[in-house]
Image 1 (cartoon, rainbow, N blue to C red):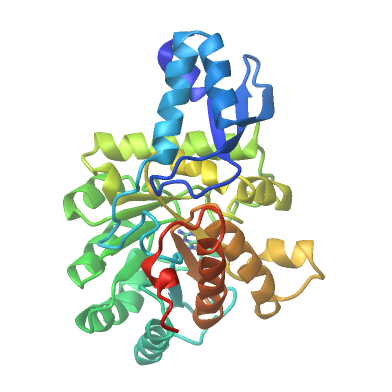
Image 2: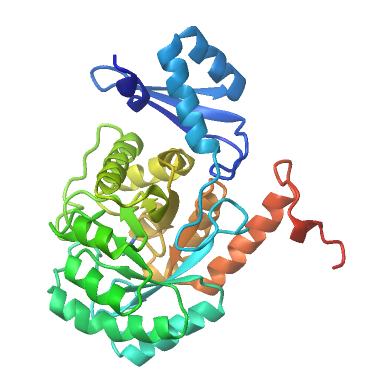
Length: 366
Ligand code: 9MG
């Protein structure tokens, strides 16, 4: 097997410690794709893993060291925001949908001023990014023309950018990327990972703004038909690695990329939970990580069939799970609730054995 093939068939999912913060990680689930596509996995402490890699020869040793280096290095800032743990709790991205058919707040933000007011309230509640979208990506949603999308989102993006808000534009259309970055958007959030429009990769590279690459198969109309994977967490890892490589080749630097596993996009409930249990693994891609789970249907399916507004507790539970695996940005509808949950998570995490020397935590004056 070639060097690169060995590295691509070996995956490490951290079991403890915060990846991407520069911390040494103590233990891993080690997953290996065997020829014929069978995947075997085992649990190993860091020193056992290195001893095993040594005994397997220099190529395996090199591959393990490279994977470890990816997980244990400090993530550089993304869009000017710290991503290496010094930010404390994960950043919260508030969702503002300027669409008539959005799955959980449809119609409420069609008036640009109402959308701007809702976004400013989210910023007050602690959001550091506002994600503005003009096309619903819920399963089965119809596509919207780029012109209509631009008409919906540009006034909102412009008003927020003028007030100094960091705006990400949720779009899969190159023309919308162009119009909204001109209006002040600071991040592109593309659920197709810049594959949904033949011009997106070149346009994003030319615009020079940071990009969030989300994993999906197919498009929102068809994606839930029959999602199939050989091994969902590893297939998603490989697909994101390919998109990161494509962006690097197009001239977008790694520090301007964030990855997102795309929960609910072409995934069954089991695919979602298998991926959510291994979020730490995706830090091996060397990019910041965003997660969007807010009010998604897997929560109702795993619970008691609650409608979107009844899925806030499950959204918070997932956000806290993600924070514990080093995910740096969480995309949500319920900003105040998420900020509170993540603040408490952070206070507890900092006081544990891996808590370190957070100056805020160590301030005894309160
Ligand atoms: C637009 N959109 C809807 N769900 C999303 C998710 O989970 N991640 C990202 N990046 N965007 C999303």
